[in-house]
Structures are given as C-alpha cells and as structure tokens.
Length: 610
Ligand code: M6R
Image (cartoon, rainbow, N blue to C red; front, side):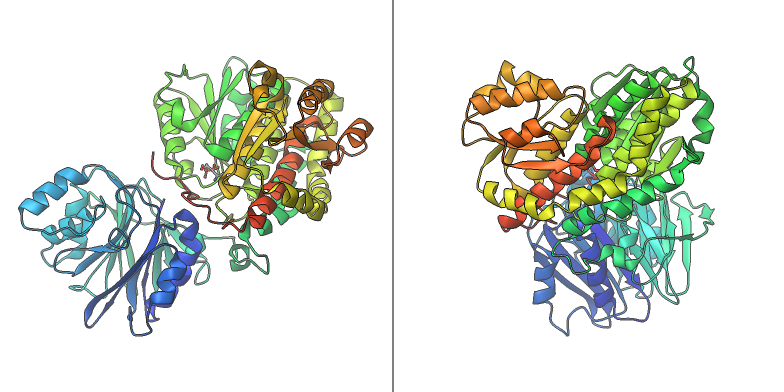
C-alpha cells in the first residue's frame, strides 16, 4: 500500500509530484505529502486525508524546486494524521524519505537512535529511515542509504533526498514495487508506471535488493552489495487516456464500460483457427499435458482474484479433469498444504504486488510446486516469483474495486482450462466449440449487458436504502455470488453475503424477511431447476428477489419484476456476464448513496502488507 513518487529535473517538481500522486492515490489515501529541495533547504507540506486536501492547502510559494518526493499513505503503523504523513525527515531536517512497506525491526532501531539523541515526531515505522540514513551520512547519500538499509528488516520502496546533495536522489526496493521513468534530462521514481505516463513511456523496473543513484543526466543501478547492474529500458504500452476519466464521473464506471474492449484484448490473440494458443505456457506445455506430471492444481488469490480462482477450479476440473483446489493466499501457507513437484500453483493477482499472494507463491515454490501467475501489470513483483506469467492485457485499472480485470481473469482462466484440456484428452467437440464460440463473442455479449445499465440503475436506486443483501448462486456461479457481494460491500458499505443457494436451508434462510433483498443467479445452467426451487423458498418467506436470468426465461419473467437479463451463453462463460451486471448494480447503489466509489474508505488497491 502507499504510493511513492520522486522527480529530479529542470521543471517544477511540485506539479509533477502532484500529478503522479493523483494516479497513485488508489494505493492509499489516508494522508498525502511532498518534500521539495530548494536553496532554503527542505520545503515539506503534508495533510491528513486525500491528496485534494493537500493541493487546496498548498500555497504558490511552497514546495518550490526541481527535486522532490511525494507520498500517498495507507496507514499501517500510526493513525492517519498529519504527523504520521510522509515525507519523514531526520532531526536536522536535511534528509527526507518516502516509504512504501513496513520496517519490521523499527522499534529496536528507534530505541537505539533515541538513545543516541535523535528526536522522533511520528508513530510510524518509516520515520526510522531518515534518522538512520542521517546517522550513516558521511558526505555520500548513496553510501548512507546503503548503510541504513543493511540494518533494516522488512520491505520497502523508498526515495530519499538531502539538502547536502541537492542534485541527487537515491531510491531502493525490497518487496515493494519501484520503477524509474527515463526522460530528457529528467528522471522519475514511482510505485508504478501510471504515475509517470504523462512524462515518459521508457521505464526501468527495479528489483529487490537494488539501489538506484539518480541525477538529472544519469541513473545508476547497483545491488546493495555494490555490484553494478545494466538493465535496458522497457517501453510501456499503456497510454495516458487509459488513466484519465474521459468524461465519466468515476473510474469504476469507465472501467466497467471498457469491458468489451478489455476482453477483446485479453482474448483475441489467444484463439487462432479454432484453437487456444498460449505461447507463454510453452515451457510448461509438456507437464501440463502429461497426467504423470502435474496431478493437482491449486488456485491462489485474494479478494476478487480469489473468486476468479474459484471459478477457475470449476473450469479446470470440468474440462481438463485435473483435481483442483482454491485457497485464499492469506490462509494458504498456514494451512499445511500438501504440495509436491506434481503440484501446479496458479496465482491470480491484478497488481502482481499483493503481499499475501507473493508469499503464498514463494511458499509453494519452496515446497517443490511449479507456479504460473495471471497478472495485469507487466513487470510486477509476482512475475519474478513464478515459472511463467500470463498477462491479461486488460489495461490499467484505477478504481479500487476490480471490474475489468476480474472479467479478464475469468476469460484467461476459461482459455487456460480449454488449453490444458486439449493437451490432455480430446474434448467433447460440441461443448468446446460452443464455449470457444461464446468466449469469442464475450465482448459483444458484454455490450448487451451494458446496454441495460439504465434499467440496472433503476433497480439499484430502489434498493439503495437497504442495509443487508444476500447473493445466492450455485455451482460455477457460487463464486459469482461471492464476488457480487464483495463488490457491494466494498463500495457501498452495505453488509452483503454470498451464499451457495443449496446451503441456505441449513441456516441462512432464517435471515430472510422483507428487509433482506436476495440477489439470485438463476441463469441457464445445469442447476437451473434447483436454483428455481431455492428462489421459491426465498419467495415464500417474503424475501425481496432481484433475479439474474437468461433472456427468454418465461418462468422467471412471470415470477419476478426486478430481473436483469443476460444474453444466452455457455454456462461456463456466464460468470463474466453476471460479474458485469453485479458491478453495475454495486456501482449505482454506491453512487446513489453519494459515496466515493473509486476510493472507498479503509481500502487500497494494492495490498502490500500481510
Ligand atoms: O492485485 P490483486 O488482484 O492481487 O488484489 C487482490 C485483492 O486485493 C483485490 O481483488 C480486492 O479484493 C479488490 N478491491 C476487489 O475489488
């Protein structure tokens, strides 16, 4: 969590830092701050709350200079407050640091620095960094940062500036993302590329235990141990319009509406002449196709990504007939999972930076498993942990709530299941063909769901005052119910629970009354009749039903007024359409409640702490 940015060049750093922080705000928005170097020393401004507050309070003569750092915070150690906001600086106010991560041994370091006379002003773990760097400073900022980092345990991405060396910036990474943007006589440092897209598309991804010495002309990377690193710049394919709202009131609705095109990007190159192709899976192709090699698949992810993995489990078992399980990354390594060299882990992470997922993958690899990542961010941390990465190409997602990246994850997983299935056994031609055809048509099917946005808004408006919701689904759409409920919870702050419909009568049915809207997934499927019976059970107890059904389902039409209709589609592709309907519903409920849809309270998009 937290976003960091740094600029060194000829332009006013303040404007560039604020622009970058605006893009990074999805990573945390408890407080924001800037530190800029000028002749008077270090000019620092901070504020509790969102970046907008800092911008409003900044006066035109503050933070003037061409070298500076900025931070947007998701609080871990210390409450959200102005004092705990970054940048932090040392007692003499000549070294300033922004930090993303956690310094685990900060108490120990703080105690010894305090004993040596250093005065701390915040409750954060991060504040030990400027003091520690200060204690190592002997005229060379790079060496001082190196000395300090050798003492710290935990993870970090940092950017450091000092009044002693006003034309230099030092940055380093261990466990938190860091990228350098290369410009003409100017350089940027940031937590991710979206923060620098306005200025450059030439970037260098920094790896763990590397430190970067930056000035206007030059960027030198080395390991903490001192070995010089030569790394070519990568070209970022995203463009600036993708990280702007372009007339939409929120990023979330823009990203929901982008799904026909994001799905097209995810799918198009991967179906050729009626077959699924995954060139990136070539190194694992033989093992994937051989039942004597991989005999178990474990899907891992957190939040929405976990729900995608849950759908993946159904798909791989149905088509490839490989036993599969799904685990929340945060639980996985504490549950003594049985892993062997014949286990394949499929880790799903939009950001590729979720700490729990990274740790779960590391654990699986240490215990002999092979690992694939499905990620949306090229060069993200997870890509360095796994054997093979599948990029989803959904484009940048700014809203904290995942929308287009979830549907792209599902599309990748359905193609992955068919790919593996084809390597293992000739599939029932009919069902593969219909599924492939439907996958290819997903963009246009999604367009049809999106055309119902105003009727979904109408339903959402009427239900936006309720405080509890139940989402019911079965089989492959049980995870869809979980995801629908999560979406509503995270952006509208309404309590919502996803539940397997068949389990309801074993307890949860006691909750049903006319204050409990129940969202029922009753689209065409092999459990359609069973789902209908479950709905009747809710109906009989005066539950208010919002149905998600397939167009033309006369039985549902006759029974329920509040129905969202989906185009006819293969059952295994239906979670994608259902997700879009649920995203629209949650979005409009939150918007009608007047909430901050893109930056819901307490959340951050990349969860880089355990
Ligand atoms: O970047 P990741 O996919 O690893 O993120 C995992 C979750 O934190 C994420 O899906 C979260 O649940 C979203 N806010 C859901 O909308």
